[in-house]
Image (cartoon, rainbow, N blue to C red; front, side, top):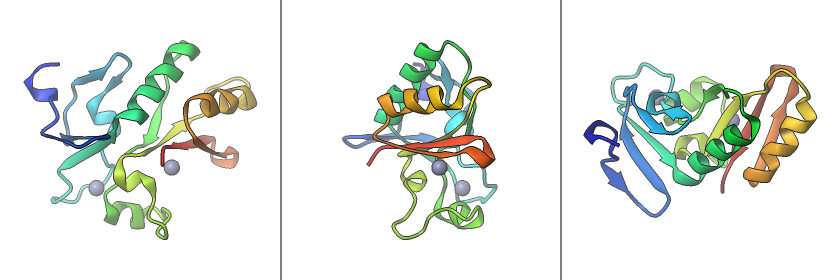
Length: 135
Ligand SMILES: [Zn+2]
Ligand SMILES: [Zn+2]
């Protein structure tokens, strides 16, 4: 890590980065892959639960192919914009969830693998992604 990738605040589980950094974060993922996809001016930071990061990286290692994250952190307004869960508020708003495109191949095997690394895995087969989260 260099200075641009160091988190500027840490609690026990959450790292908080400045949004918009195209910088390496962990072996297989870059920081901006976790950014909120909105364009609101006040959406300036990206919280990431370190357990999500470790689980994703392990999943990526075991699979041996690139994983595409379609949504990780969402600010509260963006979560509303995309129809995310509100009550209780989506774990995406806390950096505790990631949506991953199901890679080509056997979806069931991929989902089972996700369940080995994430405590909550919700497949959306019609939309070809899996929601993976920590609580
Ligand atoms: Zn946002
Ligand atoms: Zn999700």
